[in-house]
Length: 485
Image 1 (cartoon, rainbow, N blue to C red):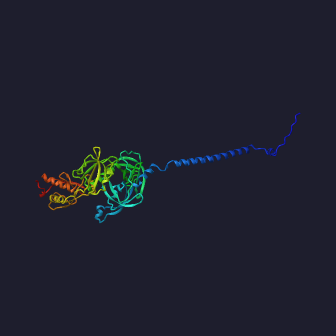
Image 2 (cartoon, rainbow, N blue to C red; image 1 turned 90 degrees about the vertical axis):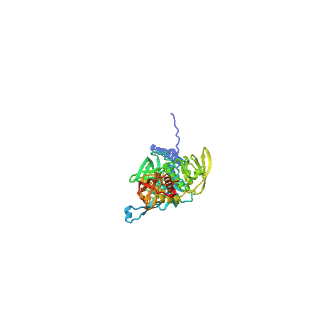
Image 3 (cartoon, rainbow, N blue to C red; image 1 turned 135 degrees about the vertical axis):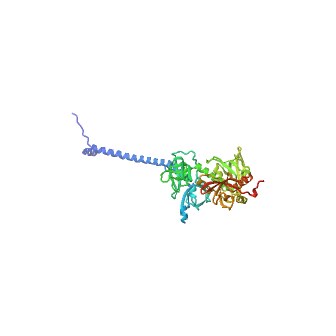
């Protein structure tokens, strides 16, 4: 028979045996241990991942700095706010009742096109404003002078009184605009300076009538918010380049506003500057070029009566430098001359037959109408005359829907003179005589001389009276000084 030897148990064994192990409690402990380990591992992983996100976010560009933000930032300093007291003229009935004109606050916006402080805005922003006040982007306040205007297109050129150089608005083109592309407007909306709004180009080539005498042509339509005070401010593309000059909003309609295309605006500004320069300097140059950068400035005509022709300038010469300033387009050329004083000698460089040619021209104020010309008009027609200022002539053209080059105010009519006999009155504007334009007194002098030499003393005259073009036939008196030889 087999025998067994009993092996004594330890206290721990006896303790376990004394309390049987529960399967459920043992499983819970294992689960808790595993959960604790998982949590610790998860926290470590989370810290690693979140740290990675932070590093990645730090490496990425700021997604809040959108193209719109960058476009506004690029040009904001080249936008100025315009304000001043505007005279509201009374109606005829109010005048009869003794009511005078009243002053109201006017406001608008402008864009800097030259670092010396030349600014483009709408004409209606500065019309009848006694003192044009300017607020720059940094809050600096100053004033500006009106240099040139074009009433029909509603544009004006100002010169801000500042001794520091100003930022210039980056110039784009309106020649390749697309309906639907994003645009931004900046302006003095309701007096809130440098207000920026965003929209799209809604349509192109819009004609917008304003009243019986004015109509905007070929405008950009946009959904960007343009409000009173935005007039004259920039319409920008997404690159922060000006593509239009904000001009009008459809009253009573939301998200319908308009801007003058920048290429059209620059063409008009070029003409304004050219007229301003020629009136002061008498170069006798007709220069052509496009509205875009790089289009150049080429002499189309050099008047034999002008200083440039006498200095050797020729049609076809491409102007590449004026007084050390490079000329890239027609606007550059106009701005290079705008502060030139009469009598100053200007060094210039032109390209002729593929070669650069250094030249110089001395400017001079155009000859004033002589006393002889005034005396002659008094003798043979019986009128005293004054040139119609350019801005006043633009207003007359807008009202009569014509494009007369200029005219002469009739300030006095001699009793018994041909002018009185044929119905010319004080305040008439003489537009033409004998089929020729009377845009200036020297031109009238030439017309009278030619008529006398050809023994054609009788001819047609054209006047504007009460905004109505009128014509008649006038026979001039003979003058001893103009008797035929």
